[in-house]
Image (cartoon, rainbow, N blue to C red):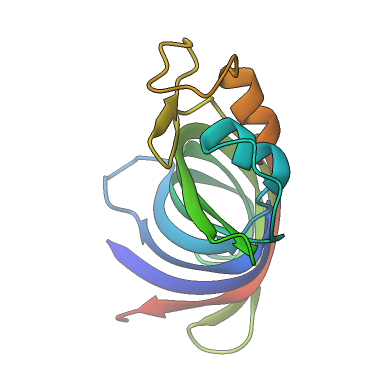
Length: 201
């Protein structure tokens, strides 16, 4: 079995970085390699005024400020399309995803700060091309698309579920209201550029 590590920067539904470990030839005759990756990415928090109504109250005082980010966990099976060696050329990949999203809403002058989190399963696929840079180093260019299912919104003292079995909803707000307020990932286009390094001989 051969292994390689990688570090990439770019866009995956938001700007960020990703680290990966790839295993090649781990089963005799198996035509795929396996890659496990973890990334930290910026995200869009959505509508802070609506989020305050859905999760807290109808107050409108204060100047809203938002930040959002998500941890991205992924596992891919990769199949080489062409190339002179196992660690070069073009690869197609596909596999499951898990996104852990957190948005923070701050209302300056309004004495209000709260977080909304949502965790989602997804699937995705794409293509990666490796360009040799000498020895065991390759330049990688990776593009693809991920799709995520609905997840529970948890914020302040409320939980909004896709089934609308909600906990402490505010007013007549529903899961659709929370989904409109908070910009959890749905379709995440991906474009990453990075470096991979083969380990061992």
